[in-house]
Amino acid sequence: MSGKPVLHYFNARGRMECIRWLLAAAGVEFEEKFIERPEDLEKLKKDGKLMFEQVPMVEIDGMTLVQTRAILNYIATKYDLNGKDVKERALIDMYAEGIADLSELILHLVVTPPDQKEAKISLIKDRAKNRYLPAFEKVLKSHGQDYLVGNRLTRVDIHLLELLLYVEEIDSSLLAPFPLLKALKSRLSSLPNVKKFLQPGSQRKPPTDEKKIEEARKIFKF
Image 1 (tube, rainbow, N blue to C red):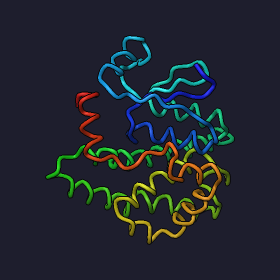
Image 2: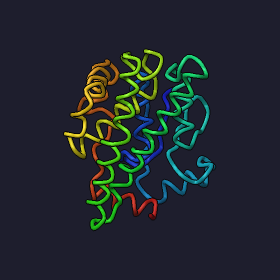
Image 3: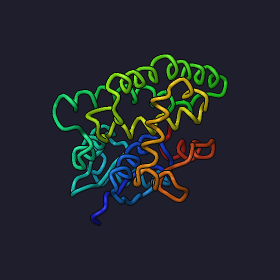
Image 4: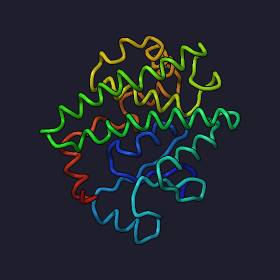
């Protein structure tokens, strides 16, 4: 195995995209081995690489890690993006869980039946506008600092930036009432590692389309 982390997943955003984002923000180069056929997934299972028989899976530092939150925690701790003490980590975890709640709704949007999609989008917009975005705007207003926790970059800033970009894909007007979040988005997007990841040709994945969903259904049988 090379020195670079190796990411095993389907060639789409899914539950691996936040891991790609965090590695990129930390300035870590990584390789990807895409699962393109059911046989690829079965081989990983038979080789004992998937503890719970599911991906994402990341090979890093001689370990085989599964479960998205566990992978994110390892990367964040290794690259000093997880706060300076236990209290900061508690805030980071709390904010990250809120981000994950809204991200999960957005993640499921791509597999929502057509006749339910409009209702799902309305729910996402409502939760974003009235619950999650106001909460993070309030955090930034409360301390007047450039980052969410400890006045320095942590993993939760990167998770929030990723979420804000997804929210804008759904409705670009949703961020308008939140000037501090807009400023945070601009500030984070200009960080060298993040700016590079946002450029065309990076390992960042585009929105998942119907073709990708059909390919995924054949592999993962959902």
